[in-house]
Image 1: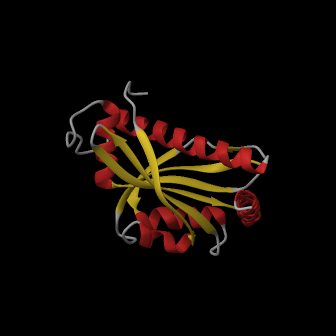
Image 2: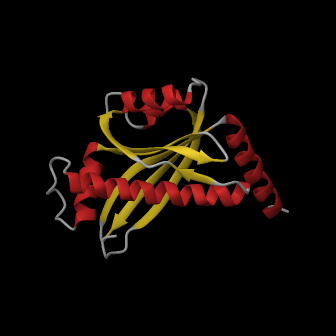
Length: 178
């Protein structure tokens, strides 16, 4: 995409109720850039890549080959780059989950939003229509030549899919510990 290697690491992952997610982002009044998509295929749910405003602007610089700190507002090109990155990250994750569960999962066409974290999560909760929805929250870091940008991947599948994932992971880890 940018002609440079960008490494992605996952320092932590946890399962939380969707309503608790805003706490992980620094509170509901934290301004975030979000790339979101619905799940298509063998499950229902939503996915999002969420980046604090400063991280999103830095990532825009990285993706567009500009010096860090150059981007002050989101341009059409910058939004397009973030959408593509979000689509790649979500698609890669869904491919791994699809392979684990043996079902087809795909993201819908992604959408970009720039809003308060609380508003973004409320929108996702309204789409899922279940206030008890649990989500897998994966802290994600993008790194390129000394520049490190952090954000979160939020994966909120329907309850049956989440349970199937946890069962499959349990079987995998039980098999490795024997």
